[in-house]
Image (cartoon, rainbow, N blue to C red):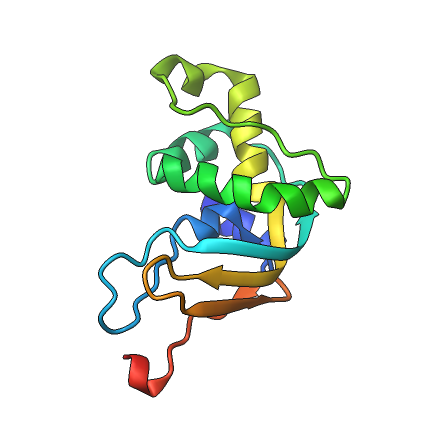
Length: 144
């Protein structure tokens, strides 16, 4: 599938698409999404643009969480001379037929990577490390 092809290109990369799907499942947490990103290393790794994939993934996104995640990695990315585009507050149906918008969304979802950093639960403050592009969401025994 197209999603599998994207994952194989750079397996060790926490993309903003990945971040958009992660949630804190610590015992007692009712609102574990979206996780705050504290980025220490952000990279840009271009992947093949596939507009149909981008459109399909858009349907699964929490748009506000994607924009929040982008804002949270922006400072670290810009400090590394990585261009970070702006995303609009909302998406209209005609934007999903606009090649420029889809390319921007692709870059944000797929090409910006958090290589090192921390994800923080918005409710409990529990921190989950991101190391070598891999978020460690494992809970301790007393957190399950």
